[in-house]
Length: 252
Image (cartoon, rainbow, N blue to C red; front, side, top):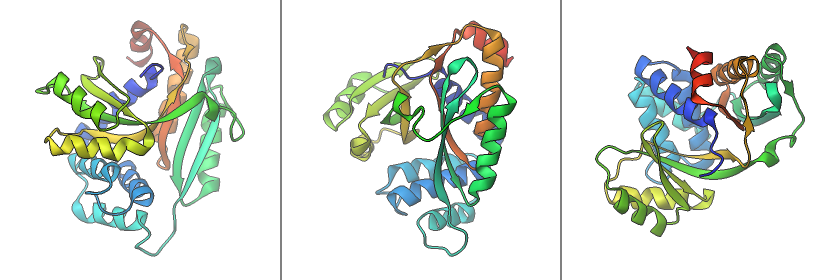
């Protein structure tokens, strides 16, 4: 899908590396809770939950912890309730940043987010200041290895997908759907035993800001990484693009 930003590819690679290292168990559990809260506790009917559970298992999160996360997200356990929060602002270079979080302490989360923006030369804005720059879509990722592209395209488009293409950067098929047909497409793929690596709703920038200077790229990437590392933050979206050479020089 046009406009899928450089940060999305960076996040996909980083998530794979974190899973291999067994990192971010708390992140996986919060992703499970969020999926269960939005779509219910049955992973067979809630494909976002199913993929969140699969990711947690691949990262070494034990079954008891996963079960508790599912029950808590679905409201079946007593205790502190988690609230969905969003934050919006601008990073270095005028890059729009949209953050989704799930927290039991709004003051803590907002304070952390604000401090990161201040530290790295950005500005935390008011609700709605950048949300209009992103459009919500369903995104399904499938490993390209061993897959028949024509069959995949036929199944996806006939079950409600808008677009299918290969992302060579991460060696995955990206299937884009309206948010309300995401589960339908997932169900169709599973009927043909096509393994789904992830399925989730995401925000895609309608336009991107070109970053062509290390003076902007370095603090921007540090800001986004700090936000992603905050335990309450679930997703970070940013509408920038930059050349691979600049990206490598700023992350090596």
